[in-house]
Image (cartoon, rainbow, N blue to C red; front, side, top):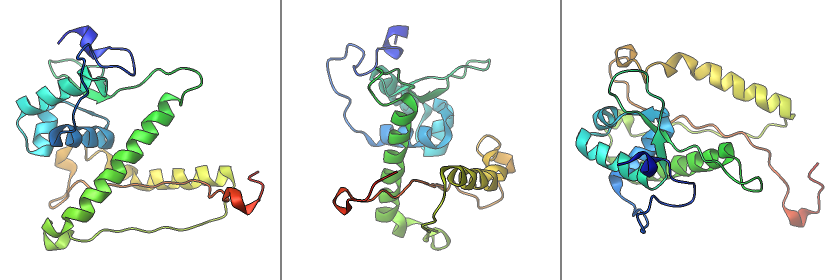
Length: 193
């Protein structure tokens, strides 16, 4: 693989002339990258139960097709990967919006996989916690609620990078919070502002 393979322009593959077909290992790698941010082939193999060679191959394929890119290295030979940060035209969605859309899609996919496979989990893990609420908030209040949730989760964030900090029996759990305004339907004729 060359530097050109990793750094191809957005929206095209690296001279492969073909689409990247869906594959279980690649899907799992994208899910993992969306969850943890950066990962090496060895870390991915440990978390997903595949060989590091297989993970390395599929990470390179994802990079070759423009889905991921190498993350900055912090010394050593480790080769970390992350979801690709796209540079887009002014009228296209921002990189942050594109990443958000990708992350939400992966979250939805992970949720659907959980629903179809939860009977395979051990008895103590065969449940999930879900809640929803509607609250009337200002944009500033919505930001404050998000900050409170982030602070509540902060004590658990270092466990990703520090396995010894994980208590016995701890497993990765998807923590998904979406705060968004409920806009009226166009047929309601209500002004949105």
